Every structure is written in C-alpha cells, then in structure tokens.
Image 1 (cartoon, rainbow, N blue to C red):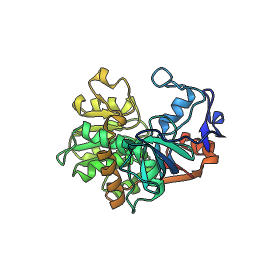
Image 2 (image 1 turned 90 degrees about the horizontal axis):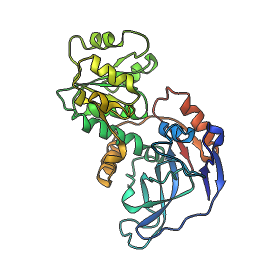
Image 3 (image 1 turned 30 degrees about the vertical axis):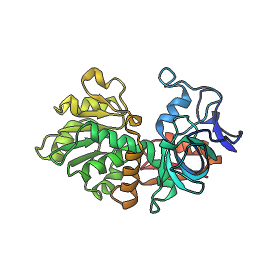
Length: 306
C-alpha cells in the first residue's frame, strides 16, 4: 500500500509517498481502507521537529490522525463493525495518510450517510478541539464568547458551536471572512493592527466578554486577560504555557470517545455545524496540500482524498 513517510525533520520536501506492507488487524483492531484524511497544523510542527520534546518522531515516521473510509477487514473480538461498513474516526499512531490504516475498534464510529467523505475524514481534530474548548469554558446562552482565528478549521466550528448554544459570539478574522461569519450569526472583528481590545469593546457596544476560546496562540490568552475575562474561562489549544496565567490548556484527545465522535458527526450531517472545505488533494500531492496549509489564512479544512 501507499503511505506518507518522512525519515528526518524538515520542511514539506521531507514528505514522501512510499510503498509499505499492508497491515493485518490483530485482536480488537479494524483495518480501514481510507477514503479521506484531514491535515492539521500540528502535523507541520511535528514534521519540522518543533515539538520534538513533547511528541518526538520515530523515523521513518508516518503522518495524520483524522480518517474516514470503508472497513476492509476486522480482527478477532470485533463485533461492532463488518467488512464494507463506512466509518470515521482517528488513529493515535500518526498513520492515517495512507491507503489503509489500523485502528482500535473504539477509535471509529459509523459514518452518517448524509456526511460526505471529505468532512468525515477531516472532522476528528477540529471537531474534538471545538468540543473541548466549548465544554472547558462552560459556555452557555448567557455568555459573550470571543473566538480567535474564527474562520479557521477549529475556530469556525468552535464559533458555531458556541453560537448554537445561544451565546453571543465575537469572531476574530480578516475582513475577507467577515461576511461569511455574519452568515452564521457571528459578530466579526478584524484582528490585524493595533487597538484590538478597543475594537472588540466597540463591536460589543458596552457588553463584557465573559469567555475566550483560543485556537491560535498566547496573544489571545493575553487579550482575554486585557478584556477582564476570568482566567478560568479562557481556554486555549495553542498556548502550552496558559496555566502559568491561570487559563486552561485544552487538548482535543482528552474528549475523544465514540459518544463524542458520534455527536460531532451527527451535528455535521444534520447541518447544525458547517465545516468548509478549503481544498482537496490526492495522496500523491501531500506536499502541495501542506504548502497551502502553511501559507495560513485557510478558511476551513484541507483534505487528502484517496
């Protein structure tokens, strides 16, 4: 089978699509023929060696966690899935960017028929991140929520989820994305340039931000503090030192479960959540997919299709 591999840290040019042995499922495992696999910014940092101390690579290293596909075979003890089932989920083995991937049976759920392959294959990291952020900050209809990078993969789902709970949501984004955000009932604010706290206050016309959901970095944890938000209601997936300032560092995999995966998939299938697909690429063009991702300012997800 074909699979993405890299044998040393570096830029996108270290990525190759190579032939490797097709695995066989062991007890409790399912072999999935992958139809779609999302790509994520964290993977670029792992590949570049920026997260070596936290998540070191083991060369030759595979890549990817998000996946959707069709069950190819099952190991002994697996009763919830059968050959031919359409599924979505994840792997913790950095292996989803491949024609076939082994997963534990509890790492996948049935794909709703109305959910297309690109969104099914790209929902795990962004969906569980959004879910964890909203739950960690205990967002309710009484809140005024600030979401950073609100047009990005995680940010767009986070902003929608908070809005669906009835909260007033301020989405930080470039002006080109403002009309798109308004379509989801989100109040857009331009994050570029000086004076951001004042622009947020002006947009809210006297209302106070009560929670911050950060998908980008430390400057937005600080923005929340500058706006007078209780640190325990500032949740971030991007600032690993957030706890030093009393804020919450949220990690998506802590909420990963069949129940949560099914809830997210159903929200997408029903249209209650919208996941924009910025671009799709064949597996062979994995370098180009990451080049586009690393340019930044992507609205929604980039997905590899097989």
